[in-house]
Image (cartoon, rainbow, N blue to C red; front, top):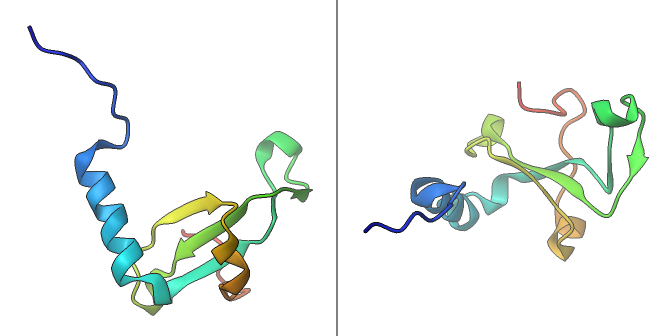
Length: 87
């Protein structure tokens, strides 16, 4: 009998994310600092503990995007104004 384990990220995705963390840290930029402008809030700026971070593929990163409230965000630069989200 096999056992089903719910793993939404999957082993491949987890490995890719770990590689990004080790190899691309110099490419991380903040595109939404301590807030968001989501469709749920009518695209109005809403303060939040979380910030949006991107591994900037324009500068050689992988393009991965995530939200976090980790302390390291304070040390990351802001994303260029002309490129606020991955297209």
